[in-house]
Image (cartoon, rainbow, N blue to C red; front, side, top):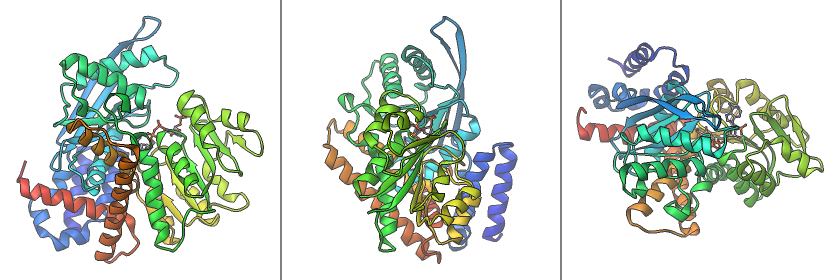
Length: 453
Ligand code: NDP
């Protein structure tokens, strides 16, 4: 069977086994589309059924999460943990709490996570989890009761050597604290390495909070260097204003760039004088308020826009040189990509997972825009989680600078691996192909070595 036919056959099986899961299908298709040359060169992968096995999670857990709200009413949510691949290390990947979460969402994220984690070069497998619980508008006590109920079930499936969850959308330091507290209580073990994203005061790593955003910007900077450019003086648009977006904004500022827009699910702010990172962080991370507050407090030329897309700022005078989508999946469409290309965009790095639709990616690539897929550009978060696990295992704490320097080295390693692999497979500058092949081959070789399991 030719490689192309083998891949078609695997994709048909994925469609048949996972009906209606469009985001998962999209993530699988993007990877399979990169693998024809690899399978042609390595028929042993097809003979061992590697691609078909990689598309099927090792384990999928769905559970009931009952909890009591502040009015004494019983509420019910659904919890998920998809343990995708453990050939390189314990399952590793975040938990997402958002009302849109379905099994489909968690499977697409878990699938991406396998290759992302492999790209870091660190010993971590791939997994993902979450719930359709919405922390927005809930009191701290409600969030705590939800997290305790969620962990009461999840703890049966995780452990420092088994599966190590972390944060994602809707899960930050507060939620990780409540989850860890309940795990500790149920197991009577201070097993620091069971969760990452902990506060540095009780087992967390310095620089973990900043890692995903910083890492995405370091990746983008390295891409810009390949065309002898830098962030210095460039106008940048970032979507979102959560964990990833905030620290991407800070890092761009530190590298001399000007972030002129950021967003949340209620709209976006345009600030031609550059987003004030400290103010935005205060509003979104500390006060958990809406981004509309930003323009109200910042004043000057900043404005809040409740309609349109954050990408529309590419139409403003001066255009946009770099775009960093850092909110959620499929948030940047082919229409938005066309707006950005017309506005002069030179580089796009995905801080979020799969934020650009396949049509948008195609358009960027055809226009010669440097494009970094999330599984490479946002790998700094999970890589620093793995550094947190190292510190927990050795009962050590590293300085901020030590951890941040290691993050930088890892991001450069990921960038260079993608670039080198793309060249080796005859597609120079194609980071999508490079990331998919480099991540896949590391996992595939381990699967061959470990036998049919
Ligand atoms: P947060 O919850 O901290 O922030 C998410 C941001 O995106 C918020 O500003 C939120 O707006 C916005 N957003 C979420 N959903 C939507 C939506 N449907 N429409 C419009 N805006 C939306 O999450 P993170 O910053 O942690 O995660 C952002 C992305 O980065 C996700 O794709 C995640 O998977 C990915 N990622 C995160 C990592 C991490 O370390 N945290 C690691 C690697 C990837 P609002 O405030 O209105 O909800």
